[in-house]
Image 1 (spheres, rainbow, N blue to C red):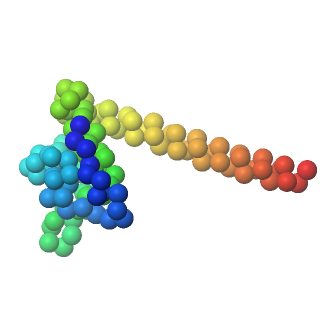
Image 2: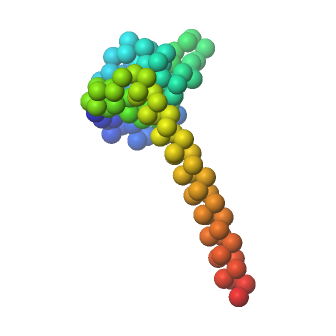
Length: 114
């Protein structure tokens, strides 16, 4: 799987296509193609000039796509389905964590009032 260079740990909000291509070793033409094929990449930000601007989350999605398609041999529709299913699980897990945080806060407040 292509690895991101260590310089991506900075606080940049957006990365240009050339930067993403350099970080992931994925050609720009493949990135543009994947934008059309994968739901998670359909809403890439563009500036006024039309340059694509990728977030760190987009880059992680690209790395996942690369892994599934190039290393695991998934078809494009299969990889798209896998990513969407994992996203749903992730959303449910986040809801559960929020609920647990509310319960924890309630219990801590209850403990203080004893």
